[in-house]
Length: 174
Image (cartoon, rainbow, N blue to C red; front, side, top):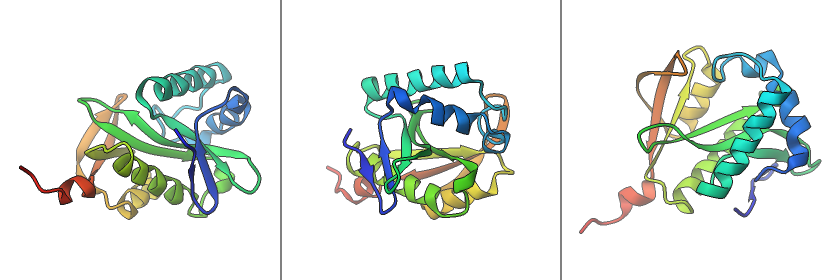
């Protein structure tokens, strides 16, 4: 994967020396409140998560990538693609709390969505969120995603949004 660039961000594969920054983000209760089971991750859990991301990148060509600020090189979060279920690919994001409210998650998510459709040629993306996570739901809507249903993931009720690849919809069928 060639790193993806936006005006302010670099979205790239993980390096082993990113572990400390990711562990700090994953240990923040406010950041993790609406991720997975809502419980912050330990250092060891983050280490395992990083290994899974790197493995997914190697095997599938995508993962939840590192998000860093282009001007400073600081890793501020994750954004990318992950297998959901039934051959669905989920897009998601998570930023350090100090980076909230600046449009960075939307910027990263839009870049990843463009990559998923233009380069990876995925037919559609899904996104899930706790119903209380209004900032993430707002990002989903900005990405053109539509609410489809309530779902359950990791024992938690979530909203389920989708967006189709507009490039595939525009292609003539045989």
